[in-house]
Image 1: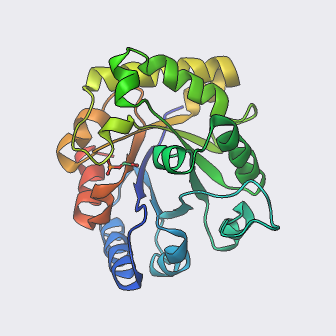
Image 2: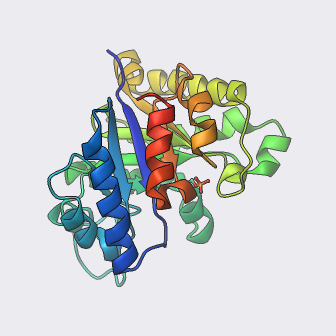
Length: 252
Ligand code: PGA
């Protein structure tokens, strides 16, 4: 079964009401303007989810959050539960982004707990993995990514409720990228480890995105690789023309 490309925008901690509405409105118009064979997802900050949902009404662009708690509700000041996200109209949540792993000390175990809770609430997860520059320099890239998959992905994850995003930490927001061959090698190894963990059928259907300085100019190079099934885009997702050009240049 062919895997449908997922073009996902991670807006991170960016966007007040006016610019979020403007960005979502531009994306809506662009998505409507042409038939494309990919799935779109935007992940604004929590504060803008409802606003962006409204701005995207009537167009097929999925809404996702950038994190969630593993509990349904309770005494967790400042946290947001998976059910609160589905209640707002989210269908996805990004989990284990390297910025959360670094800024909030999120471990594979915690990411896995969150993923289980998110799936239980009906959310699809985008589980992020990726090596630091030091790990890459030590030749540990594939091992680090494999361990993150083994530790962060729930044992009963399926291709329907889980997407993996390979994002080398050193490539995020830096303009630096691995070579296409490096990306394909990691993706192929990740798919192998997914096959061991979840079975071949799920692994073959599960989407593995590349993220880290994806731009219109390099979209085709990465998104035409056999094991790359879309992109998780930070900086370039904040400009509707760049975000849409990534999909268009990848011919999806
Ligand atoms: P970037 O971010 O596209 O700005 O490198 C990607 C990400 O962190 O998801």
